[in-house]
Length: 309
Image 1 (cartoon, rainbow, N blue to C red):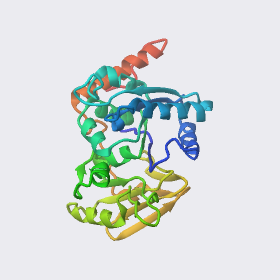
Image 2: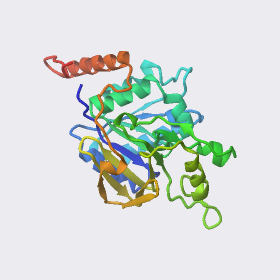
Image 3: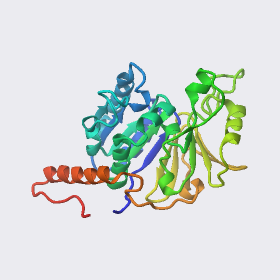
């Protein structure tokens, strides 16, 4: 099956800030159809108000992007083993109709733990690869998409020793070894406390990097606040949008790309084109194909398959 991925947009922060409007506008303008956005609550699913967090994003899109008439659905995939499980087919059903899938603030380690090997995660990747659905991640979810993710809450808030957690490795099937760091240039600590590198500061972040297993292919991708990095796997291009920039660290080499800048995908490593089904269980893959075909048939006056396989 051909690999035909949609765009991947990663916000360092500010996914509902005034400056984000231009970023969504650029994304929606490139779409051939009306935006069908599904917001997954998972990264904030441990919070009692996770529904409110998702609703704020939905309200922002309705208000700020009203010219595109986006249809926005919130999928309450909050926690495994509950009535709001990311493994519940009814909860994740809206994903099959989505051309934009959003996940944002919360806890990166919680998001990785609740999504790993779940129906939601497999269907999300299948829709991105098969139907060209765009993925939009921000803040905590950007961290969770890494090969190894930063336990921000555990270290910065709870004072645990420095350590890493295994991330969701979104780009692993493409042969890339990436660690994303949102809030790269954070200044909440002012002159008294370095809160860059997602609140951990340069010194502690350097210590963390030294703890990782050796990997000559690894890139650290730091995304400034109120800034987004859009990755176009199909055309092997990346673009920086928003107020700040993106920093790519490879060993001792550091590259900085300002807003408006474009660069080739090879800045992130040697990217290969995977089989579209890579790492997706066969049963879920076949069910996704069948669901897409059923939905396509319903939309057509004369039912016909969406694709041949």
